[in-house]
Each structure stands twice: as C-alpha cells, then as structure tokens.
Length: 429
Image 1 (tube, rainbow, N blue to C red):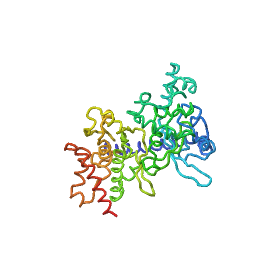
Image 2: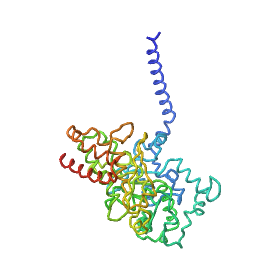
Image 3: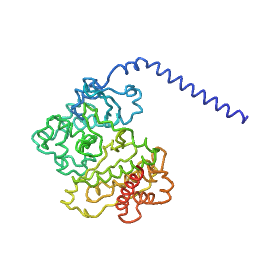
C-alpha cells in the first residue's frame, strides 16, 4: 500500500500540472482578440490610460506631445495588460524614439500602485466634497494644492513641512531649489512660485505630497553628478526616467573584482549624499538591491528609486542650533528577520549636522553579512577570496560599519572601508 502512495501522488501532481497548462491555454484562447489588440495598439497615446484626463491632479505634461505622437511605446511584455496584476509597483520598460537619434530604452512609472492612486483620488474628493467620488478636476481647486495661488511669492516650509520625506524638515533654500528646478513648466529657472501657472503649482504640490521622487531627480540631477536616474518628463500620471541598467541584485554572484568595485561605489554614494559642497544631506530610507542599478557601459551604480529620501539642510541646522545639533548621531543597529530593514529617527536626521545613517544603510542592507534579500544572505561581498577572508580586515570593517561595537565606530569603519575597497579595486585591475 505504501509503495503505491508516491506513485499516486506523482500522478496527481502530473494531472494538476496538465490541468493548469490547459486552463492557461483556455484563458489565452479566450483572450486572443485582446492579445492581438494589445500588440497592435499603443496605449500610451490614450489620454485615459496615462490619466492625462485627471490633470491637474497629475504629475505633469512636459512630455505629452511625445506620448501623443506615438514616440513612446511599451516593450513586448509591457503591452499585455493581464500581466499588470504582477506589476504592483506600476513600473514599465518602454522604447522612446527621436527621428535623428533613433530609439532608446526608458522607464515609465506611475509612482504608486493602483490602490495608492485610487486612494489619492478619494482623499482629494473627500477634502473637497466630503464624498469619495467626484469631479476630480473641480475638486483640485478646493484643496490645499490650490491654496497657493498667484498672489503667493514663495513656497515656504510652514505650508509643506511633513508632506513627504523630501520635505520632512524643509529649509527655504531647499524649497527654492525645488521650485527653481521644476521641470514641468516652460518657465523654469525662477524660485518664485508666482511665476508658475495655477495648474503647474497644483501639479508640483500634488507630486510633493504623493510621491516626491520626480522632484528629487530634478533638484539633484544626474547631469550635475548626483547618483540618481535622469528625469525626462511626464504626461498625466506617467513619469519617464532614463533607463540605467540591470538592478544591483543581478550582480550578487558576479566575479569578486566586479562586486568590490560596486561596493566601493555604494560607499562613495553614501559619502556623497552625506557630505557635499552644497551642505544638503540626503538620507536614503529605503535601501535594497532593487533600488540601485548598474550602467551596462560604464558600470556606474545609480539610485533608481528615490521616493524615500529625507533632505536635511546642514546650514539651517547650524543656524538654528537645536539641542545637541553638533553631537555626532549614531544610527542604532537592530537585527531583523525581514528584508531591507532599517532603524532610523527622522527627527534626528533633521536636527544633527553629523549623521552616519547612509553608511549604516549601505553596510547593513547591501554589503555585510547582515544583508538579506530574496532568500540570500551574506551581502554583496559574500565569499571573498581565501587570502582576503583569512586576513579578516574586510569582515571586521563590514561588521563595525553595520553593527559598531565602539562609540562612533561606524564613522571610522566607513572611512577605512572606503579606503580598503579602493585598495582592493586597484589591485584587481
């Protein structure tokens, strides 16, 4: 009796597998017309699909002509709408074509899940009418997004503080920078809010409140050396950014020399975002292998998800001198059984001049043995060559950077780790 049990289970498994394949075939057969239609139609020219009909409750219109002219089209699998159920983040790959430049790959983002976008619509309607459904365009003019009319000269901290991570603790200098570099207006370059049209002001504020990633990319552009993807434009609720390359996770098992180079770049990013000539500290709150990508030609590491970035103005902190502002702040290490865990206090990030958060985030979630992602552990620098493992210096520096045992140990460990990785990169070439 027991001998036949595995055979019966095996047959049952094969039958279920066959039924699944048949069911999938039937579904595809029933949707054959929709499949052909998906490949033939460019949905990115549809105003409703990109939510252009919801403006000014949208992210911008600077690229609408390119969308409407059919210059942007989804890549093969992106055209199949029934696959959207697996695309929770609403991030798509597309081809963008210019007559003289040819086509190139770009990334399209809705900046939120379908549920998150529905929620923001309902919030706008409730604030304007008290009901979850309404005429969204009319409702926008009755919300805080329309409060700053043409009579208001500047976007000030008291209006938007706490709306999102970008403006968790905004200074006037930061807000002027955001307005001056706002790309969804023809008259960019002025920090005066009154120079924007009413619809442009509402779009800026909507973006700032819902998902400020486009404003981070515009305010700290890649053209000026910041480690972020390049912002291209928007139409409705579809934002276009430059395609960087494969995600960092694809390099988890790359040759040792490549991983050392990537690790060095990650520590350089942590340093640049913490200490720079502009005295803005940009703290990454969501650090995972999916949020960084690597350029295929230059091998450069870039941050590709900048939604959760706290920007602290060090000049303002030095000027206001909050309690203990000049005392170095050490982020607390906490073991966690989940992926990409970080412990932080936004209040501390906003009130201290010297903070080790970015070193902590990169070391714990990407480089050290504490890093866990998709069931794998050991971090990007796992399994070093025998002579490096035997030396013990790399492991000790990574441990101290992630989980310091000495006071202010992470600051010193991060400095020495960057130097050590530079040395390893040099010997690898």
